[in-house]
Length: 507
Ligand code: MLC
Ligand code: AMP
Image 1: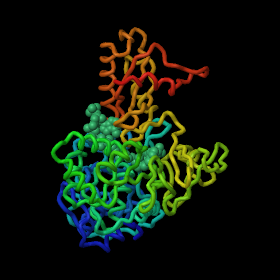
Image 2: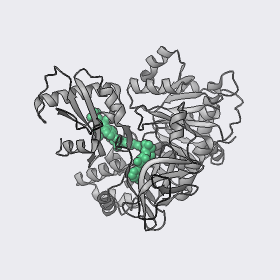
Image 3: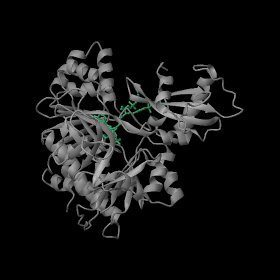
Image 4: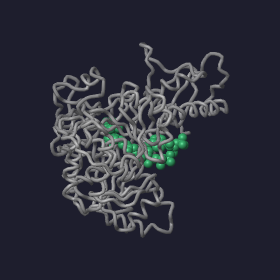
């Protein structure tokens, strides 16, 4: 058996693993539930043999038992997002081509039609965890384990395939570097369809025999109360979450002292998935006494750079390569840049993903001589890496989610009142970047084109409603402006950096 998390769980059987909506669960409970799930998924075959199983399960014991069960049956797990509308769920399911679907009771309704239309079996958790005796297959570490969908410069989300060895490398490197101990307890507030929630917060806890307590949906006051309990030792989040926590603290005259005192007792607080503004790092330190540890990562590679656990956590920096990560910054020709000169981050090592599912060509374009090209720009400054930007204007990071401007444009172009549209990410105090759209109205459209006019507001709402029905909520434009003509260069390409100025004057 080469599934590292399962092997480690066997050594921690009696320890508390999960505290979630289903109540507390030990590692032994997880092992039993996942063995039954695996047995039920197998039925009368002896190995799922890399077939995909997509699952829509809220955070908690059921989620982990499902993930582990798919792995133990030899399948490839495809986590679906509970916040996604039917179109996005269907798109991922059609791309992943799973042999079956799994849902918990709370999310089953979201998959009923999709399963029926495709003649896919839809398993309920309560059926899967019913005891069954079965022989589980040996799963070698080179086999595919997981497919997480990520947006990119190509519009449609792609499935990022990682093997068991790659998952173990991703989880193991942060668990070791951040000093995870079996007596740690993390408060987990992140979604589980991305590597931050799945590997960095959950996996690194479980591989160390620690406890993961879920608090979902995110609720700032509830998080502060859990800090105040003194029972939490680790917390990880995206900058938007820390911003919300600061706002909640500032708005609460009654509990500030108690909340701050509780937050001081944590061993470690980590920020990542988007740039942590220096003013936020400083404000957080003033309120809680905690110097946030900022790190940098990506779905394709797990975590690559991290400020140190011990030693200087430098504001505005993402530190140095994590153990096992080979990383350098290169110029357009692939030559390594000197310190102080910015270039693209490229990464090599055992944690780098295997392939984009069914996209050989796209996989080939993101590797050069065995190095993965991240598309992020950084500079090495006095021994610490600093992220300075992204190569593509079409990738937006909003509240820690990566979204593709092209995907949103494609959906909005389908609206009858839209002739053309351009989507950009605009700096935002809450979201880091917010999604904004500039629209050319279709001929015969009756919209008055003055920014802020009633008609513009009406069209904005129509477009947002249109988008909400088809896209994840975090992809829906927060702001829509009508323009006579999108600014284009001589080649006819929309000049997105110019367009951003249109949205800088607020809502
Ligand atoms: C929610 N909304 C968002 C949004 N999250 N809009 C833009 N960006 C987001 N990230 C929408 C809601 O649907 C709602 O829309 C409106 O904004 C207000 O929502 P809210 O109630 O204020 O937000 P909330 O549900 O509390 O969510 C905020 C959040 C969440 C920050 C908790 O976005 C979140 O969990 N983000 C983390 C994402 C993450 O884990 N990324 C890691 C990717 S892996 P409406 O229309 O209803 O008003 C990765 C690699 C690495 O990046 O390095 O880690
Ligand atoms: P995803 O593809 O959703 O995994 O998001 C990965 C992207 O998030 C990276 O390519 C970066 O652009 C961004 N990112 C992650 N961590 C940081 C950070 N600490 N600072 C700036 N950007 C980050």
